[in-house]
Image: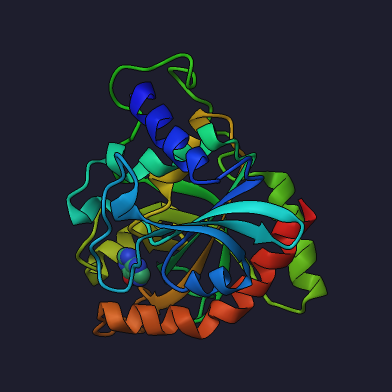
Length: 269
Ligand code: HPA
């Protein structure tokens, strides 16, 4: 595994991707952050050795490297999902590569269904913690050079980054919520009974990504910060028919607020 990671990292370094401060995974609704990056390199996933290729509608597959204010960042415009048929190993591969490129922090975003009755569509939820219903990407032989066999998960989402994000949201007058993100495989959205089940076991929002990436980032000791845009509601009495298009449109409507928050936050680390 390490060889393939190093091969990909070496390829990207040879293309000029040098010493990024932070990695960014742009999910549904955060693609616009790319317009704030002064792009130095932009590489299609299909041109990167060992990278899977993103297929889902609304997810572009590009790795972007550049200046983001006072930071060098490497950003994934479009991520890999388990429901697309990739193994969780493939889903997290780019995060492993980012570590070998030298990132010190990982920032992620996604669209999610809100199951907390206090949420409304368009809310930004800072992820405080997660519940994982996807296969764990660390199952299998462990390479102790990469990380420990039994990684701690007591602070999957960095408390310092969350506190800073709350300060930034106050400064910018952007209202944020905080909560627990539950990851499921999808690709079906939930039945009303499933949304209820997830609420009962402690979730505030449910989605189909982010957690595998955070698990491997924590395995490698990288502090993580993640946000969800609430794109639909899984709350009794407010559940209605939804499509992927409705999710991407709802996420896009909140994109500029989320982009501002992430931009100021990343420049403060
Ligand atoms: N459920 C699961 N994943 C999602 C949802 C949802 O309601 N909305 C956006 N991603």
